[in-house]
Length: 356
Image 1 (cartoon, one colour):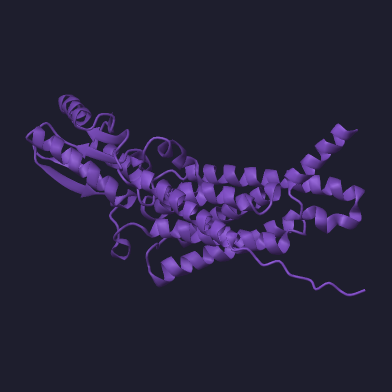
Image 2 (cartoon, one colour):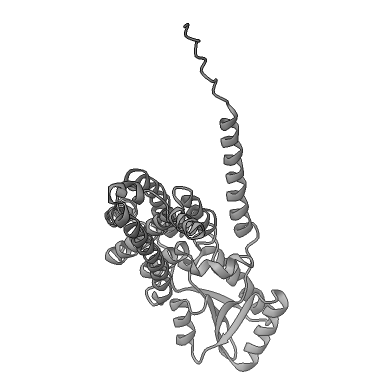
């Protein structure tokens, strides 16, 4: 009996073209997201704190409403100190202080966003001109020479995000056959090292974010751990494809609406509503506040990070309990069970119930 020569099947290049098409689609979605967020920023309900006579407040309100309908919301303050304090705490994005006569003072905070400062200054200057009053600027939170564009907080956030997503993939590939808590423990170590590395680069080397080292390390640790925990939770539920869901939330949308390039109130509909509730924006806001706006309230950014982290850990706990339940019946397959996504276990259980 003669042996028939075996012919190996030639590999097809179709996968290469499929990858190229998917990569191009990713490029389109990424550009679409950032383009939608940044192509035409405009104010939406931007709060202006005003300490001035009632007649001037009414004229200012009417003038702003005519020039930019829905763009500004005038809030009266009892004194110049209160108006300035509102801008320093960012309960108002800008302010105007005026007496019965004489010049008006336009209060802004460059550290809260240069584009926001420019829009507010232009709008209030035009309003003052219409009222035949000279205007003078007052920047209550100027940017230092080491961060002239005010983009260091955005660099701070993206410097945590991208390594967190990439690191999560590595933790999944090398740790999926262990209980999920081993990956969580590694994520804690990564988050701590990433936080220190970020401050080493931005503070010690560039001097861009200074004066709040301990607070920034805490924010960076919490932010990075939140990123990794959410990606890990998605992977625990659906496997490696879950990374795509996390990337959609954080890289494609979260970065575009983080507030690092365009303030929340200047984003278009849809993005403007979700931006304050994403970890990206929480990290940018918290870092900006502790460095430049110490009177601002950190409660909301920390709440957002806490919600995302708690939700991620809750999902991981559920998947881990599912793994343990599966492992009791087949202890010899523990490694394989740990590597199996939670949705696969659920589908198998449902199939067995239907069959019985």
